[in-house]
Length: 363
Image 1 (tube, rainbow, N blue to C red):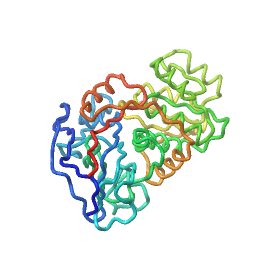
Image 2 (cartoon, helix red, strand yellow; image 1 turned 90 degrees about the vertical axis):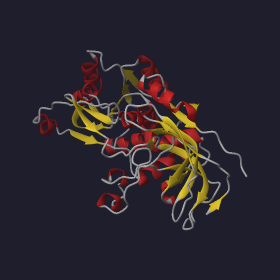
Image 3 (cartoon, rainbow, N blue to C red; image 1 turned 135 degrees about the vertical axis):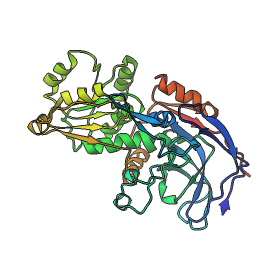
Image 4 (cartoon, one colour; image 1 turned 180 degrees about the vertical axis):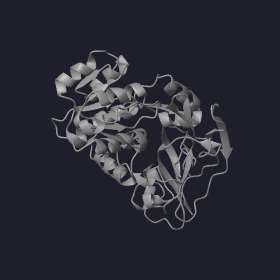
């Protein structure tokens, strides 16, 4: 095992029970073997998905829930947006070296099923996702099963690089599904949180499109305009649907980063014929659809869950080339993990919050 840094303890903030506050944990430093890589966490983003995992369920509408208890063994360290520095490697690792800085692709599959073979590990039915089924980055260390899941981030800040692993990747993959889009094709982004803002930046780089953004929060609408949105509208405005249809003739694609009944209905209502609604958000609920309208309007409804390792490599290349504008990043200490989750739940975070563990001193 090649090791440079002397770290005396593995410090984590773990979820010990669904619906409970995180608890601090200290354990021995793991020693990587074989293809494993030990990463010293430099930054870990805090995501709405962490809230769902902490709650232990997704809301399905009609009083129904999707229980996450069967798939997530507790205690579990949350956090899947991780950037860090390689501090130790197993004896089969030759393509990353101690001291190199990398961002983690956290959506790791079993490596053996058809989805994994097709390069879609994020859709594996036996996942090893960091922060859910495997310990994540609300910690000072993360043990990664293979070096291929570590991508260079060059001169990018560690906080911004970390957010690309989920908010950036989720936005990028959803935009890929929404396309192809010409510069004149109207695009609607619903929800101007961290992922929605990432989509505004990426849409400009990917398609040259300045999207329309819909959000009920005036501060988030203003943030979307500052990020480069062509227009920011309130979906609760009773006149906005009619105005958008008249203005655009219907949008070519709508991407719903909220995933509530009201937002999905709004997206469907402003699609043009042949348009696509890409569902990303996991807020919860259900929508009733008149089935004949699907073929008559020739619209498509697609689900999009994070993104593939290949898509993340494409996204990282765009970011390293300076073609993306970093979103607003708020840095907080690792010890504030629970308070940051609480702030995210209450809508008190603009852009993205990242946790930064105290760094060990070099040997």
